[in-house]
Image 1: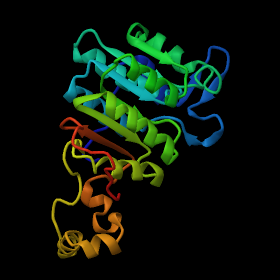
Image 2: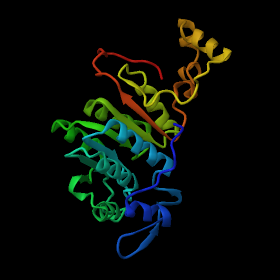
Image 3: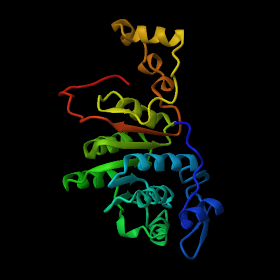
Image 4: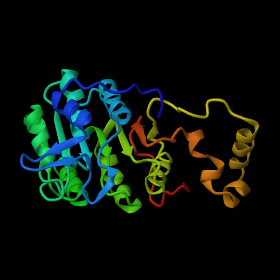
Length: 264
């Protein structure tokens, strides 16, 4: 996605974290990197946080959910936007089975310090257990962020349940979307008639002769059988190039029959 301005936080906790690039559990001060991989960031970039807030400003959700809380940087972005939306009551679910272990409870600490604890529910369970539990309870969401374990099968399971929980008009955002494992889930989801790239296509607004040739080939049975879908419809043409991609549910997902499948 493009055209997202740099975020300027109104919440002092998020501002402090982003400006110092440090967090603390009250005893030990740590860099804002992944504990197991010190060279890798553990949080959203500021332009990605701004995208999430822009979506929340637009959708005005009542219930939101994220998979992967960590130090709660994404949680603070989401909750800051929820608070300023003025909608009441609001609920945010944050799923992270390692919050009290790997992340030292720092995410919870940040949420409480920022004043968001009254409407945040932290579930220290794996998403493949927590999401079906929420679904059974009848929980519906208007916005969700997938940013946990990034294998294809894990993200696909999370999308499966969130699709069933997401209200029409709601949005699912995928962080680290440039990873092939996540890109494939996004391409699969776009085969559903229910989903479109949030905000329209950011790329590919001008179709070249090569693009026209690809589309003509895609309309033929021969083309579909001989050429990979990601060649016939490349990511830039679908509008899904970037590190954080959001899909909006524009209609109910009720048009697929048993045995439905499309290449992606």
